[in-house]
Image (tube, rainbow, N blue to C red; front, side, top):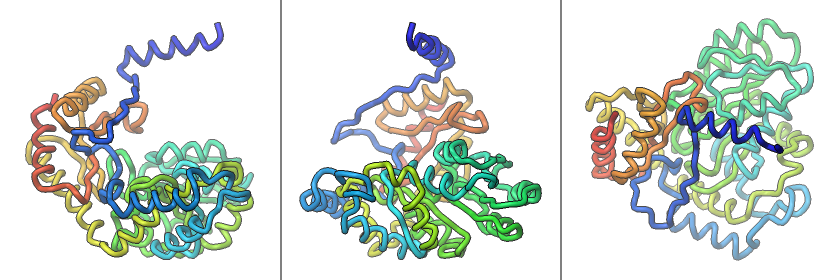
Amino acid sequence: MAFGWIDEQAERRRRVGLVRTLRPRPADSPLLDLAGNDYLGLAQHPEVVEGAAAAARTWGGGATGSRLVTGTTELHGELERELADFCGFEAALVFSSGYAANLAAVTALTPRGSLIVADAGNHASLIDGCRLARATTEVVEHADPDAVRKALQTHDGPAVVVSDTVFSVDGDQAPLAGLADACREYGAGLIVDDAHGLGVLGTGGRGAPYAAGLAGADDVVATVTLSKSLGSQGGAVLGPARVIDHLVNTARTFIFDTGLAPAAAGAALAALRLLRREPERAGRARAVAGELYTRLTAAGLTAVRPDAAVVSVRAPSRQEAVQWAADCRVAGLAVGCFRPPSVPDGISRLRLTARADLTEAQIERAVQVIGETRP
C-alpha cells in the first residue's frame, strides 16, 4: 500500500513517546507563556502590531512574488538597512524565515570542494544547510575551538566554520572569539546563527557577534530571525556587501521563494526601532533568565546556567518530560519540552523562555508550578 510505512513509523513513535501534536492557541490564552520565543515581549506590543497593520494596508497581504521579481518593497530595503546598521554589519538580506536564511548562508557560501566545520549542537536549519551543501561536512565537539582547529588543519581549500551563537537547547553561548581566532589561523570564514542572541546579547541587544567584537568583520557572516526578539516573522543574513550580493545571485531560498510578507517586515521594523529606543529590554530579558535559574536551582531542580534568555531544566526521562510539561500546562503554565531526537545529548528537558515583560509575580508563579509538578 502506498505510504504504508507511515503507519509503522507512527506506531513506533507512539510506543517510545515521541508523538508530536499541534495545539492551536486562542488569541486570549490564559496560560503564562514560557514556551514561545518572544524574548522582549514585543509580539503584542501596540507599536509592533500597528507596524504590521500599516504595512498590510499599504502593500497588501502578501509580497506577491519572489524578491527578484515583485516581492521586494521599499519596506524590505528599509528593514535591511536598519537591521544591518543596528547589528554593526555592512549589509543585510531579508528572507521569509530564519530557516531559509540559514540554508542560504550555508549552501551559497560553500562551493564544491570546500569544508564545513559544524558544531555538534547546531540547530536543525544549520544541519540541513550542511546536508544540502556541495561541501564536505565535519561535525566537531560542542563549543570547542581546538576541535575546530584540528578539523581545519586537514583541509586545503575554502572552508567555513558554522555555529549557533546561543544554542537553543541549553541556552549556552558559543566561544565566538575563540572560533574566530581558529578561523583566521587557517583563512576560513565564520557563519554564526544569532537567532537567540539578537535582542538579548550585546549593547542594547545588538547580538552576540557585536558583543564579541566580530560585527562588520569581512570574514564573518551572521544570520538572525525576526520571529524571536523582534516579535515578527522572517529571517536575515548579515555580512559584507559582497557576500550579500553573492546571496542575491546564488542563494536558492532567496531566488525561488516568495518574499517576506510586508506585514511581517513592518512589524519587525517597528520592533527594531522600539528596541533602539528602549535598549534596557535586552538586559531585562537576561535578568529574568538569571532569576529563573537561581530560583529553580534553589528549589532543588537541575538547571543549566543561562548565557542569554533560554533556561533549560533537566527531566529524568523523555516520558516524564512530556508528562511534566503537560502537568505544567494544566496548572496554567506553558513550557517547552525538548526530548530525543531534538536534543543531541539524549537528555530530555523543559525549556523555558525568559521574557523581558515578565513580572515578579509571574516569575514566582512559574517557579512554583514547575516545582509542584516535578516528576
